[in-house]
Amino acid sequence: MSDALINGVAGAGGGIIAQLITYPLQTVNTRQQTDRDPEKKKRSVGTIEQMSKVVKQEGWDRLYGGLTPSLVGTAASQGVYYYFYQIFRNKAEAAALERKKKGFGDGSVGMFSSLVVAALSGCVNVLLTNPIWVVVTRMQTHTKKSLPNRGESLTLETESLSSKEVILAAAELPPYGTSHAIHEIYGEAGVWGFWKGVFPTLIMVSNPSIQFMLYETLLKKLKRQRASSGKANDDVTALEIFLLGALAKLGATVVTYPLLVVKSRLQAKQVTDGDRRRQYKGTLDAILKMIRHEGFYGFYKGMGTKIVQSVLAAAVLFMVKEELVRETRWLLTRGAITVKSKPI
Image 1 (cartoon, rainbow, N blue to C red):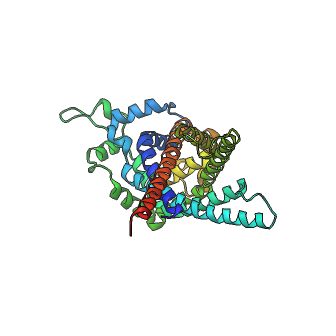
Image 2: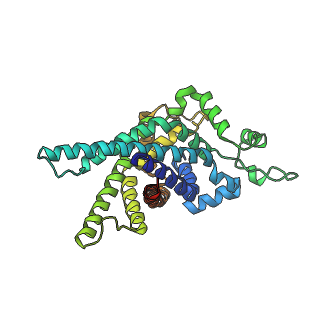
Image 3: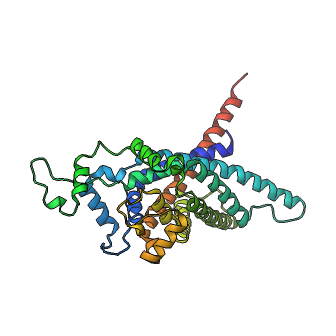
């Protein structure tokens, strides 16, 4: 089994586990990002309060809206990313060794090369998996209107809803699933609708680029410290990997968060109430309207939630991925030794 395939499969496994643990936070964060309030009438709601509100008004299942396509997207994204990352990384390492033979460098991959490798891997990942994330965003931001039980009059719970919304809620079809989201997206913009937000997402490849650059730099420094103290380079614990992954993701998230908000707003269902301030034609239009009507604060809505979710997810991902790679290599090595030791 190739090293690239091992890393791809391990990355997919780690991504799925991290997604399952942090998904409710991701759902709440997407809703915070896509909350368009140009007149700033709504009171700012914290993460815990918003989660409680979703559970009370829509049920626990809405915190996991879009979980199935999200798991597929996570496995696909992590698998594609790590697979191509390892391929590009191997090429970069080979190029570094060639330069060393010619008298240039020490044979290791530098920070800039690591950044390029991560960026190329991210671009391939975005182009291949963007349709999945458009569907996930639609399902996460779909709001199920709560109504009174049968026999109760439509009074308190529907006072804040318009008559049209009450009628739509009362006649709502069974749970809003993946097929509903796909038909809705296709009906709005055709095939190209599945690539909404791809431009800011492509720019956002700087997030994993920065993340992996920071992670590998920190990991390399830690291994050098271990080597200088007489310990083996591989003597890095799961907890240490967890903390390194958390620090790397924290730095990357702070830098690229505004692009994530723009992407989410483009991928979410567009507002059709006639208010042009809340309707976006494209990336530039969204950015200009957000600056004009919401100020720079609009680009950082829900950032606290995102930091918690991203740091926790990245830390779990790195820890699980490294453990899976280590165990897989050990099993393959053990299997090879067993085969060789058998008499012919």
